Image (cartoon, rainbow, N blue to C red; front, side):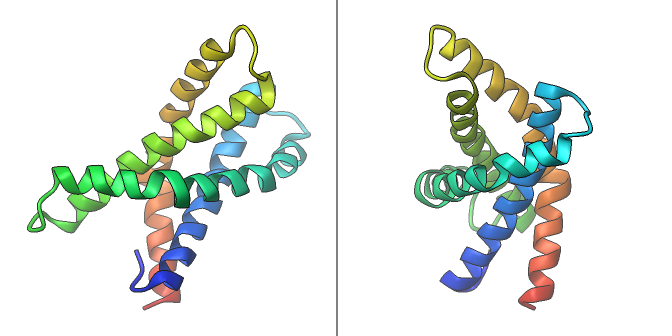
Length: 149
């Protein structure tokens, strides 16, 4: 979304911040449960995760996800179909990247790396797709259109 590079960057940052915050809460609760240190634990990992997510979004995932989406939708298709396809492929790509980051950060590259990575990616897609399609995507679009009418 956005009519120029500045607006597109603002939209990307808004989307990334909201998704990283939501997924950070989810992953911390998966690992430690609902404890009194939840907010502290999320805050500690938030900035590094956000930096990695923005990098992955801008450099790795965005172009590929949009390319895949536009191979499957036609220019005449409704905008909602385009948005859903782009969102789906963005979530899939970002889950793969951020699960790799999370697996390396928490488990390292050891004997059970592949098992941890696949488990993490599987658990993350379960939360990330509905979070994006139902909460973060619509909220970001709503806020963005208020900032840039």
